[in-house]
Length: 363
Image 1 (cartoon, helix red, strand yellow):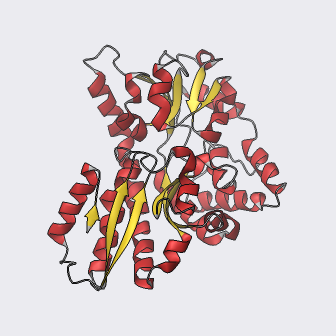
Image 2 (tube, helix red, strand yellow):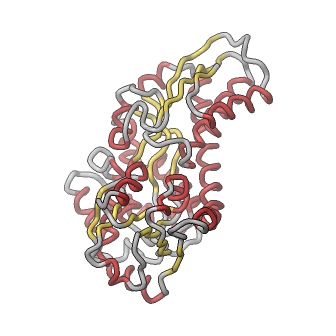
Image 3 (spheres, one colour):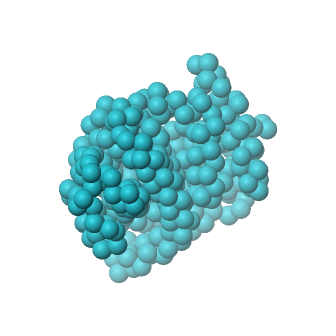
């Protein structure tokens, strides 16, 4: 059974009904609410009704002992982007997307990739690494369970670029400009002397439209559905790198109240969601850029895409302050093993055959 409020969730329901055995004879029905601060047009949110929920239902249908009656509330209907962790932890939603970017005080170790830009542009790699880190590093895992949530599946970004309402021909063009960025990603703007303005995909369009900012640090897969290109048609490909952004989580108390079979289904579906999300990100970057060009071609502000030269990009890399060491120092002062986790992270990247463009552990 399912109570839905989105077309995407309805489509998932119809597909599931056509392919799975009937659940009418399930011995027990469990009511669960799932929510998100962002709409399902954002790819990693859309995959909750599109991948995660159908996979849970598919697994449970194999035994027929349990079914989930899903109530879905996306696009901030239950909580905003600044309350994703507490809303799931407090049970406002049983399951939800936790946006770790905006939880710096509660999830400081989870901010690691935000303090190590130019490490990798491969979203599948970053997801694989962070799932392992959460499983292997007790202090990192505790940032979830210590906030009364259980981590189920990971989310990441495609590589970050700059979207502005003015052309960028040189790094100096960003000097003094107001550029929106989510949480800690504002520090990435230090080498170009831009002024960071805190924001999210949910606020970027209005921020630029109203003059709060003149551009954003964002990703193609988010900019397309959020239509950022309409107000910031100048896309400068910087390839700042991909980051771990959070993931799907379930309220710890609710999770522990579930039968073991349902708990296992949640964990398995979370792994499927993570893998599908990684593949999707890897495929969507260029197609999203192409689509923005196509959609804007007949309008007053056609999208113009330019890439930084290799020299400009290296200047940005070289101009980065030692963000990773700042992150280590701040967290070691809180008796958190940040240095060990930074080393584990960089080692995990290299063990997968990737040499970071900036070796943050060797500075």
